[in-house]
Image (cartoon, rainbow, N blue to C red; front, side, top):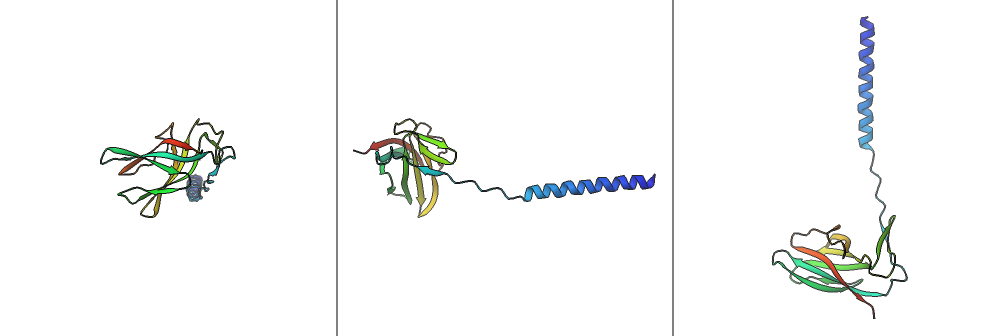
Length: 154
């Protein structure tokens, strides 16, 4: 009887150790890398848009100024260390798997890909949406950024 109880205790202890080892192995597994998104500007959109208008609100002064930035260009915000670069504009933004593209040249879901650098260091790279200004909104302690308009190519 004593031998049977000792065998039972040994089995429970071995099972507990195996479960702990399995849990450790599960925690130690590396997380798969996220597949980066690819931006595809369709031929029907290329060259059709010249610039975007971005409202930059100064949170301390409680005022905003609208800047017109050419697509592919940068501006340095006056009295700051911030540089804004508009990398892409998609008038009808859609996500198809890992591809970000425009379904048409119609202004159905306008979005601008913006890169923000502070003192030469990138602090944000993402999208501003006219219809959804708070979606993925970049939070800066002093400034807010909103896509408010677009300039068609002539």
